[in-house]
Image 1 (cartoon, one colour):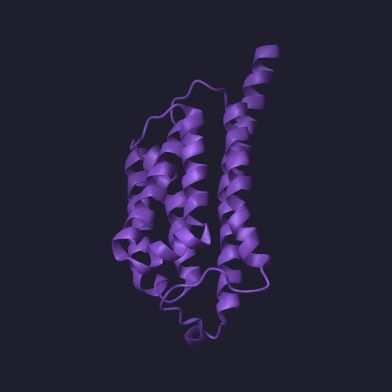
Image 2 (tube, helix red, strand yellow):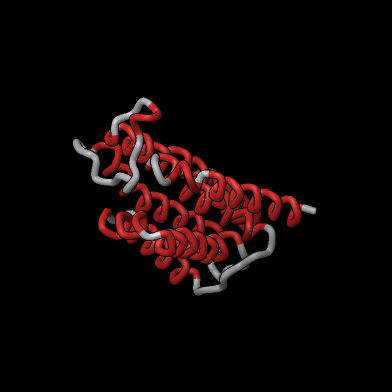
Length: 195
């Protein structure tokens, strides 16, 4: 039953990505919400539901961090935002890389829970970088081609700042919660061994 409920949660997250599709074309914060739903909700739930992409743990970590950072480089982001098939590639590769990462972290791995917690924390810090840049940038560097933030009472810079804040805080809540769980389990296992 837990695998079924994880799959249902993942499907709901993916449905959220689809529902945000049109809004994401005019509001950068909505597009970043799509990314968050993929990496912090859908991918971990897919793995907990039994869907895995098996790579060596460090390869899964590196592909996730690399692909995430690549698609948040303004030139790559703008290219994807202008071409619908490229945007599908962007979202699909982010999801696949996130599933590969979470497969190593939440699936059967050769590393102990302490090492897995460390991988989650380092991934969180590295994937925070684009959000921090977006939040503190003095000008809008990431906008959608059909940007219409004014329709929502925002300037393009404010839209970008909301997107950066969303990337920074909610994603970290998920990453840090999983890392804390793994670290606590590692400490508990270590104390059982020494008792």
